[in-house]
Image 1 (cartoon, rainbow, N blue to C red):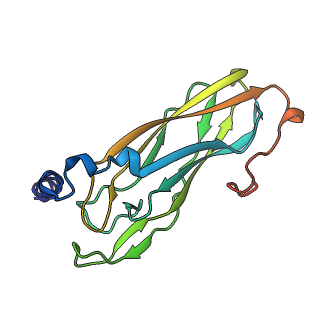
Image 2: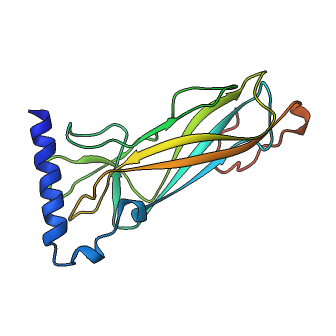
Length: 182
């Protein structure tokens, strides 16, 4: 039953997008509604150091994305996953609490993110982490909606680039406005 409800919801969204008086040329893509930026809390990061990666989601005014803790089974929760390369380990992503908002299309308030949202993941550069420029790929999945329509879900590939050095003496904390000091 759950999949039938999901298919029905997606069908309604697709039909609305096609028949919308705005015309399909004016319906934005989910990629255009959310602009993610990715930051590391250390630059450079030393072998053996723990740091954080932050994904800052800037959501277009008039839109929202479902929070990680979704209100209904058929909703698509915001999700961040890392594909850690050799030499790195991570903890669980920290998702902010959403805000309950009432929309005309739902009988219950929905738990959503609006405006700017910061997702954080703790990462450790292990003692054998490769030196030099390293890249940690992330997948960010979300579904953007307005009060009138929901766009198809989007999965974006993001890249956290950082420089790994041998000694902690070269480390520098950066972007303090985004990170709680560990």
